[in-house]
Image (cartoon, rainbow, N blue to C red):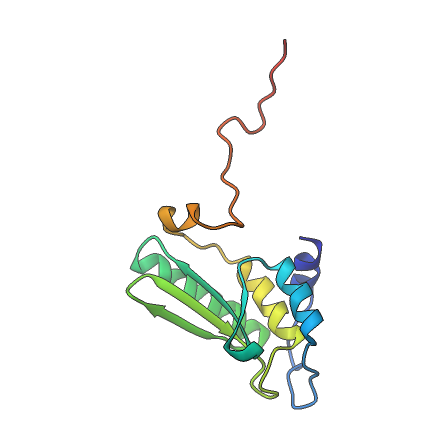
Length: 141
């Protein structure tokens, strides 16, 4: 969580160019541990996040909010909505054709965007920890 917070504090503005260094395999693996909703895809040249939204409007709302974050950062992912509620976000640095630190910065910021997930889909996710109904309550003898 600490690394995710550090990534959210960075920005992408003006940082992506042909001179932007690609992440090493070790750097990618390290960053993906901090961002459990993301996976490496397409031959190691893109990071991908997928989820099923509650409904069509929830998927569209997420895409609009993620797009606004990307516009502020000046770093633009591919955003897809298929099967009416399945969302797919793909990020890579186009200028160098692979994954850079700025892709993880954007991914961390997109993770902060509220998403209205399908409850069934959410229960199946290993990174999801359901809120306990008794959270915050203490028992005394």
